[in-house]
Length: 615
Image (cartoon, rainbow, N blue to C red):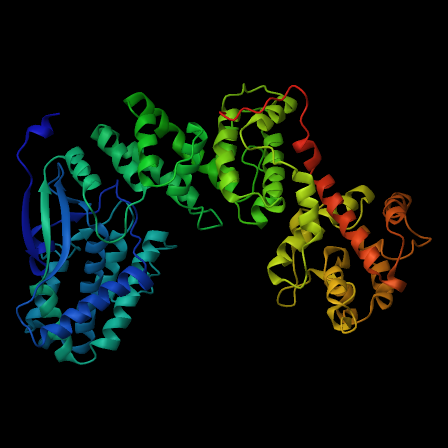
């Protein structure tokens, strides 16, 4: 409260030639996000703007270039911690380092001593007393990279071991700077004039504040230039502003552990703190949270007192590990891998909130199955994305409220009662969509392959043959760079369509005219007509493919039983490949897909399930 009664913070303009030297040491504090400017975006834009300014200065010497405002706060050690502006300051520091190193290659040591721009650059970048860089990023592990670049002028950083992502970001941006300078400041005169311009005409407005919570409050409320902060960054700042300074180390360690877990997420779009805190927030709130403000508001409400902050701090590492495994398709409780076949194959993310909400349930594995089933239904029933995403919070709310010992039956009923969980006419929609998929449309290929993989594995499980004991990923693995995989074979082959009508072509391109074959079995036979492929299909490792040919005398009893069941519905027809047979086979595959994923059970309501639109 006392900070509200203090006088307004002091603002002052600093030319680049003074900024780092007079605010030394400049520290990127522990609560800041990692350095994240992208070379192809933010850095290139900055370099382009500075070059325009440089070219314009040749005719107009009186202009200045404002890089925006930075906020500093003094800590107990007399260091200047960056509250706002660390992305821009770090990028400019890298540019100055690259310029200095360019001077070193273009001028001999004696001439450098008499070069005013070189001398000023060196004074700006390092402390004369100890030769250490003035910008330090100890908590993001960037100081060692900045020091190395200054001392060696090389990005072949071998002495630091395996670099972290923030360290790699620093190196990558420095390389872009180095390349740009080589291409655009080829002669020494341009190098000198460009450096002088930056040092004298480039400036920041500095806002100095002597209180960390107040500084963070300013930071959050200001309109910021550069890379916009996400809710996760603001949440991190908020947490540091709410806890005593002697707890900073503990929170720093926990937050670093979280980001280490997120760095291991395979899909980079999911491996962000933003995605993590949003998934967790939806699970705890049971509501949709779109945008930075609603998300940050939720967490501020959730962490309204010290007790809740301490609890959050104690959980964040554990929840990060849980999230990482879930996002990578691993059951986070049992470590079984992989699960969520539909979610993984079609790049879903909404399921992560559901898993957070169900984390406490003894039957968590069953919820994982439901997640996979429901996402498959969303994909193949052509459910509106808006409806599906509105269903997720309601489902989270239902699961979070259940006791830990809830049975599978109770979990299913509660899920079905959640608003929008049950899709009207889902099974008819799914079967209709699958039978209308077309091989002629490239956009349908992934869906066709997924359905064939599910149906093939389901039948192989019954016959205990093929790759049934392996993950579905084996059935989905395509041939790549000479490595064996599974091909989606077009039985008729589009080569023989010249005499077929448009209606017939539509049927012959449907899923009923496709099957899976192991690549080494058929590469030389792909151009044959259906009857010519009989020897290849009869030797297939997959029951669904083998069912296209007559049952051999040597088949094992369990496989023979499955083949007879298929052929009871689909008599062998390769000798006379007809639209009627293909249409029947399409419907058979669609029904097998529904059966394999237990979608009928998912949407069959018992009398005691009451849909609650308000849930």
